Image (cartoon, rainbow, N blue to C red):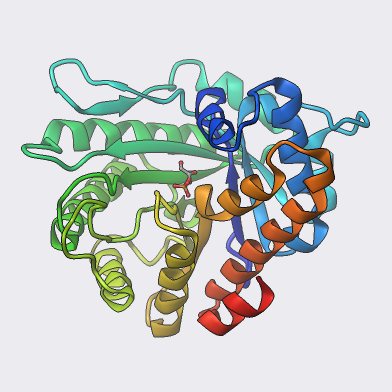
Length: 328
Ligand code: 13P
């Protein structure tokens, strides 16, 4: 999952989330359109060279391509590992206004067994932590960390590698220092819970946010500041037994998500592999190129290849602006 030069494609948008992406390109959110769009990525074998694993939504794990081939077989044939989003989304946290806790633990073992049979070898659970006045609260951080750890332990029981994703959102006006503080607090709490729940850290992939400024902040941290803060925050909180870190993009622009990852790998000096597990930052360009039209398939695959390649380079600290422009 964190092999050199490769990273993870997060194509696990729920039916509601993919609707937002499709609305933006004027595509109707039907099962066939969701399949056609995802199939074109999985069949882009040049791009898939940079994709070690694909996180799928449950529908896709059981879906067949237009010619009847299971989509998981196409992913596997491309040399990539199928994975599955298993949480049931962030739901309002009773008693804690404007905060959420992620649900989905009920019946998880049983679901994991059927996902394994279908070819999934890793899973993802996303906890969401928002920053605003008075939040996050300790109870929200603790409840989400606890659920993440229970999920991770259940996955390991079922021979599935858990991706542990505590996402501190970049929505808001806070600066990078506040994101830094909350990210450290969240990671510290998550690793305490993982230890308490007897999770083997050697078999976990962490999917954190980078330490960035809030979208509405008047001062946006530079690429160097983001890279340095992120490395320092992780060094202070993430045990070295964890083999790999695969960042979410979280609403960063495509190019910044790539630049930040590359800069971190250039700086180096940490014990983990650092790569990408991007949703939007890998797919925005191909989605736009595709726009729901069959005749745009090749253009969409080229756009996907470009982003996958740029991020593959970034995972080795070898991306630069010249390469970004050249191949585009
Ligand atoms: P983004 O890269 O768009 O944040 O998505 C990654 C993901 O899987 C969020 O759960």
